Length: 434
Image (tube, rainbow, N blue to C red):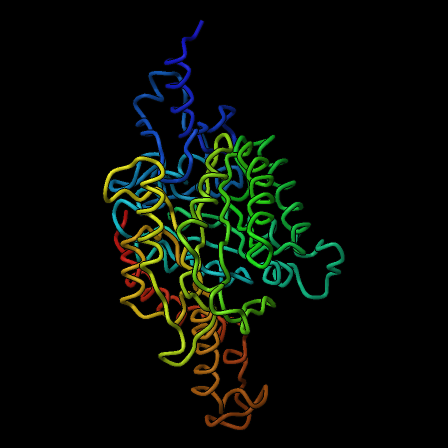
């Protein structure tokens, strides 16, 4: 018979067996949030227990990783964190590492394989993890706007397709990726249900979920209803070792069809007591993993200076209040916060928010502009070669195919976006993390 302590050791060791071909399940944690974690074992313990790390997703595709991308883990990250999509305990360990080392991971909304690859390239250059996320509209676009989206079928298919693309390519780039979905309002819950069904099927076959995490945004609903629905979904997600991000308070502005430009200003600022209500309810779920997107004046989009008034101290006050409720000492950060509406934010506000436990910052508007700016500048620089298939300043019979090849402006867009993301990684202290 295996005693309780031996079972815990075996379960913890299995947390490293993240491969689709490994039968051992991930270690499940009783952590109340991502701030609570158990130490992951090193490979030597796996060998002693007769376990193996197994093949990667790329190996299943016949595309084994080589050179620097073939690493099993990273020198400066917890040993459970590996190249590719991280879930379960590896996800918990990565977010806790971010909190302890005062950096936040950029979360970028993607709508095509090009934008996904751009994120992976930027993360590789920064030697840092990244969060790739899909909105419902972005998921539908990923599937193709010509596809029927009745009952969110196209959005579900697009998100699942994007997830498999991320899984295939993240290991090739050699970076850890948190695979996430963005704002899911109440009317979009069928979209989430479809993705969770896909993760349940994936978990049955591979012992890990397809996605790392999902966000539920019920900030427009009464607080009690918001919490109750989040608890219900977290109970389902916890069985798959998934993390829930919930929104508390409203993020102003407009993004992907969610318009809060005329929101009550008071709703843009969360109270510590409300954050505690969420923390208390979610941490009661067995195997709970969650983060909280608490509003502190956040606004989607980019506005003129002075129009956005962030108050990061709301996050500090929430940490202090919840620490008191939990009997924790001074300086404790029991909450893991998410910063929405990061585009255009003042760098001082970003740094301050990170110091109070922000471990993820969403970026969309700035990367949208960067992508477009690459296309715009390419068009302007090559205008004389983009007016017809044949004929340019070099001669009336000279072909222009190499200029209007779609790969040319798309690559220009990728390059400008990679450069903009490089600034994001730097602003978030998320450089040379490996």
